[in-house]
Length: 336
Image (cartoon, rainbow, N blue to C red):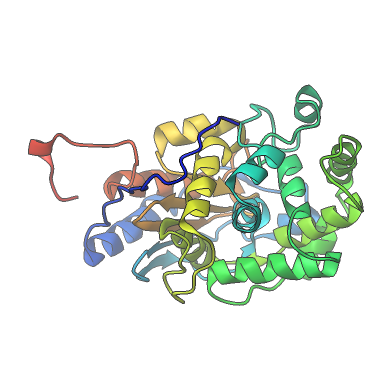
């Protein structure tokens, strides 16, 4: 980790705002209409229960930091959160232990390898490298407060529920299906334990991680969860503070670097926003200070990212002026 101690420095933020309510509604509906007919990709089947998803489902939701909700299609259909949970558990752990400690223990650098790579652990002396790959996510879940596994799991569930603004429930069928195919994650956890990166019952930690991935959410929930990160840690619907502004900054930075695994560079180049995907077909994308976008469509590309979700997100990033790298000259600015 770089030595970037800035204690006492008055931190400033630069955000902007979304276009008008009507313009956002129009663009969300247009993103839905543009992509509803795209039937490319395949539903994930390496977890048997996920293979039963309806490939035709497609939902989009934008939640703004003022609590406004803009939806199209199947935005309130529930599915399991899967790897998207990694971002929010990481935020909860950072809120508990702080920027430096979690950065040192879990890391923030992209591995350049697949999300479940064992080689990446070995090549980095047992360091998980970042919280968005499975090794880092398991190490992060192990840090959740709680004396017992039951307490840790409840803290995960209630924490993610606070982000969503409602009580989230676990999908028992998906949990059992994933638990039956967990051999690789259990091996990763044991490898981390051999390096001293995880302590205690590594199998129990993997069970908590599997449960967190099995929580049921909708595209609307993802948008609200993302908008909480966009709004400095305050849920824009419930007005409850979930995490601190510094934690939001750190979480979004990690998402920008590694949220889409080895394709994170391509994602930032094309979309220009921190984002995270899950193999059930969800994607959350965050525009700091403005709001967040949640999409759901089960058909995935070869990297495990929703085909329609990516296309809808790209369209909305451009048409709503969300890309954090985009700018106009002072004399040429116009309303999007």
